Amino acid sequence: MPKAEETVLEIDLNALAHNLQHLRSKLQPSTKFLGVVKAFGYGSDAIEIAKHLEHLQVDYFAVAYTVEGIALRKAGITTPILVLHPLPAHFDEIIEYNLEPNLYNAKVLNAFLAIAEAQQTKDFPVHIKFNTGLNRLGFWENDVDYIISKLNGALQVKVASIFSHLAASEDPNERDFTLQQIKSFENTADAFIEKLGYRPMLHTLNTSGILNYPEAQFDMVRSGIGLYGFGNDPKHDQHLTPIATLKSVISQIHRIEPGESVGYNRAFKAPHFAKTATIPLGHADGISRQYGNGVGYATINGQKAAFIGNVCMDMLMIDITGIECKEGDEVILFGKSPTADEFSGNAGTISYELLTAISQRVKRVFLR
Image (cartoon, rainbow, N blue to C red; front, side, top):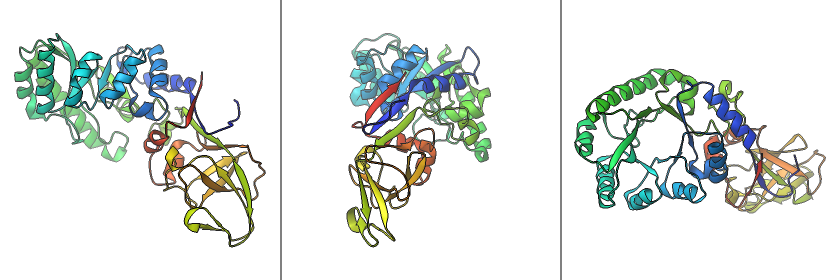
């Protein structure tokens, strides 16, 4: 693998295929697989990730917002795309680009039906979301009759799926709550299907759901973080491979005397003779200011170098005292070790936040 000569996020597409295969191994052959590629493919590159997953024959994609779905369509992705949080301002574009909206409350349902009628669509695929305890988006169980009253005779749309989202599928202490969510979803879906007169797909499992509740896989499952290499639990993580490695280089080395300071606000003062390195990576690249001042470290030639001082916008400094290295040497922030999960844990956050924060000015390099 070539050494980095600048700051890069290396994306291993073989690892992506491995993770998909592992998650599929938990499923019945007939269960469909939806890959979540929102937030720039969890910070990787949504288009490259979606193209590779399309090649690996996933059945569906999901994005958060309409603009993300449009970008995939413009890049030539033809797989169905569910928009998880569509807003009425974009419903014309959803129809134009053949995206499939999640209809999660009365306002959104009525707005979409009106635009679909105006555009004279027929059987346009929509998805109905029910809230089973996350209390974020979704109709309530007792909204079934209302939704059916709106859909009856509305030939411009057809329900492609009914779904919900689990709140704590990764937490064994919340097993009772999760089972209750699954049961609630099943009951609501049964009542809905009976009145609808045909059977859409059902799906409620996320990555941790696939790994911990495979008995509730219904017709389709959805995975985001699992595809990118994280199972929210060390016992699952060992079977998954993080696809992203953040690398940089040493721009400059300083030798400083006791009492000398490093960085803004003189946040670091050397307790003894020290050697520091400056790295071209900062909070504008996604390594936020909660790192720095001893929180977090980089790896150089297999050795840990702690962050010192405040992380700057475009640079951060590390303590390389006692480490054999030179200007131009490769520096690893996270990847296989430490993982993004471990790296983010140092700052009391999660892999999702770290990965999706990596700025698009950081060059993506794909390993195929």
